[in-house]
Image 1 (cartoon, one colour):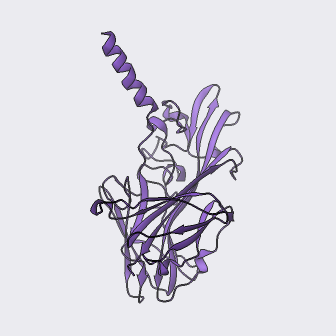
Image 2 (tube, rainbow, N blue to C red; image 1 turned 45 degrees about the vertical axis):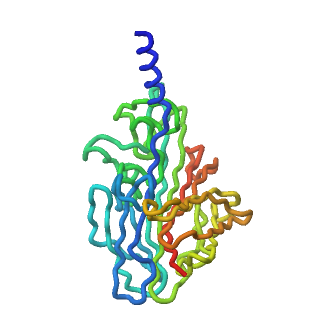
Length: 321
């Protein structure tokens, strides 16, 4: 009996301490370079352990935005949601380089009211069913994932409590608020993290343009040095990463090609930007690549938050020489 009790205790400890399994959010366009203005680009969107493999969950694409080369806004069409992926089309009807993707900024974390645990940024349960409660719950424009959380955000441990890597805590559904503005007056023990996430790709029709590459100066961004239309497998590509408009030196960047299941080697790379924030990538094979960088600091722009986590993801197409 003692042995069984020790085994049960060990299993329970592992269940509490094991980190949540990470899944990568991805956008996979059918093509990124077009010769004319009569075509549509079809996009698959999902989340899985291996990028571009539809085996886990579809992406919520309510927050997808389409920027045309002249700065006007396009739209997505023919949205369809399947078991493992979402699909949509974008009509490319203007010459130049388009930017397609989602950007979200939200706050997640915990606080106390009269000694009781509360949470901000979770999925509220109330009128409208699970996930109701605005952008923080994955509403239109939130850039939320299939689980209804901001894309790239760490899911709360256990599905309900604040996701800071500590013990799993169950939070009363009535003690959840959608945004910082909903935190009750007199709240204490605020432990809030600002989550800034971007996931995008570029499509060019005819001659490329660079009008959409101007950084906003907010959060983690990437500015191509090598134009996305010029990425070739036998030539290195260069990209500058910025944080709040300034170079991001020593930034860790993950680069993973698609089609991993068909290769003996996975060709995944863990790279680092130089002192000027420049990343140089040697492409081992042609195809689509999932490129992701994440960074945490203590410089949030939200007054009540004390930390910030940023994630930037881009899908790039590299052609054969």
